[in-house]
Length: 266
Image (cartoon, rainbow, N blue to C red; front, side, top):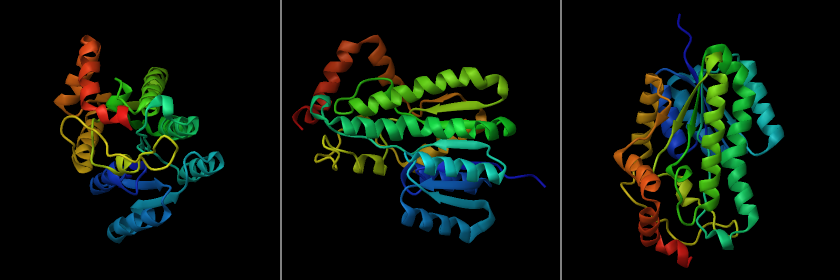
């Protein structure tokens, strides 16, 4: 009897994380759901457990809580297997850099960079044993500047650099890394964005290109995982924007200031 692929998804109680967990479960994976929202997480667990309870586990915790993260790693290790680690949990902010409290930058960096790094390092022995893969949900904001997102851009850029280095260091150990670079998705990360003082952002987000659904993105991520891809730019807009920033940065800045003017006024 074939052992199911075991996939851990952070930020699994909503948005892209839930879409990924549900899609992986539908493909026969055993899934480990992780989120800080205990009530929502329990509901998602119950929904999947109604279909096949042995294939789903859940852990409610704040990934920036070091001791809690260590307990999660111990519990996953005790389970004996991990094939795919999806670092999806994240937060963002909408506020001009010069007006933003440092606590906001620290919080964004803790969730978007430190937590996935710590979780991945703790899970490396399991991934080494399974020949597994780390999937990181980056952002186009990690490749190019976006007004009002200085902390988020910094965290996602740091995430990219760390895991591109790690990719080279663990390749001979059979561990793969898939970096995913979405543009704008219809997920709670933007509706829950922080403002300059750490409270909810007061203004609506600006966006460019088509705002895609979480289910649309999840399907592309799992297909890229199956194909063994190293990086996923899910649509033509993400490719075009990244090239524009590199080839014509002054033009990119003019267009960004025009499109994201509300960020300068907030």
